Length: 341
Ligand SMILES: NC(=O)c1ccc[n+]([C@@H]2O[C@H](COP(=O)([O-])OP(=O)(O)OC[C@H]3O[C@@H](n4cnc5c(N)ncnc54)[C@H](O)[C@@H]3O)[C@@H](O)[C@H]2O)c1
Image (tube, rainbow, N blue to C red; front, side):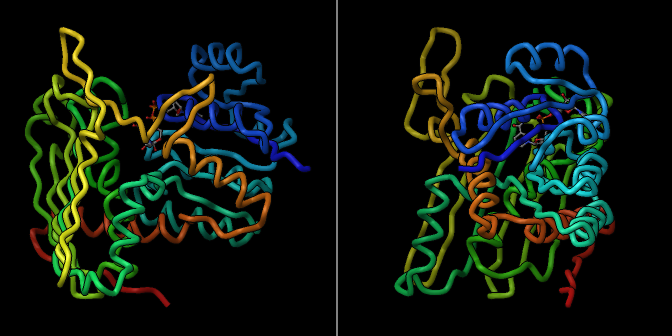
């Protein structure tokens, strides 16, 4: 049986999950990694026993690879993605597809021209709670969805300590695109209109010129209104790196999900913790969870020639919403999203 030869570009906090998934998959063979950081190349090369590269072009030229994961910072997805596409590879891009519509469209047009397949890692689509909510929504007995609420927040360490590139992203891109994608997937239709407000104070006072929080109001084609709150200034002492809630009011049903406390609580004398066992866990040396499943599905969809659960078009639609959110923040007016033919 064919095994997919894979490589990863960007082996930072999240790229490690791609390396782990490929390393442990019976259907994949991890061949190489590319990262501009020499310490990361040295560590990952030794740990995974794979060849390392500082330039994606060199990796693509020298290695025999079928598929590439792109896990570079949000604003630096397009260049390595297009390079991989142009050398005939299928790709899995970390969310968001890009932080500008022009980058998103450039990736899509390169994929069309070179016949590459593009998946986007919107891993919330694999969260068991989100799947259950979507299944409930699909039942005629729930009735029409009328109003939705979703929030996703990170602790302030994420933009201030984890990343050097947070000023080039925003809550709408880094967190909002997760929500916008999930909402499109829940509703089975598109956003037509956006109004957003936000604050730029705390992070700006620390020299990071990006939004602290963004509240967006989305109108869907099915008439349902959503409020989406995203931010990355939660206190460092919060029980988890992130927080999130979903609530959907339908004609005959109320659906709620809490992604903050998933049932595991840890008290270690210094800090109360609520790790999410459904996202990532290790058992018998193998990684499991909805952080790993999208990468395993990417492999299977390529080997079995099946459609991806989230593809480049989903990435583009989420980016259109993020860009409309930013336009509304800047203009203080509502922004319509035109559908393309
Ligand atoms: N951290 C999270 O919780 C999380 C969760 C889901 C998705 N993501 C997404 O994953 C992507 C990566 O995020 P991260 O948290 O791993 O960031 P990170 O800053 O920890 O890692 C990015 C890595 O990419 C490398 N890099 C940058 N430019 C490069 C280039 N041109 N070629 C090769 N390597 C390059 C950097 O050296 C770094 O090692 C982002 O798009 C992010 O939104 C992150």
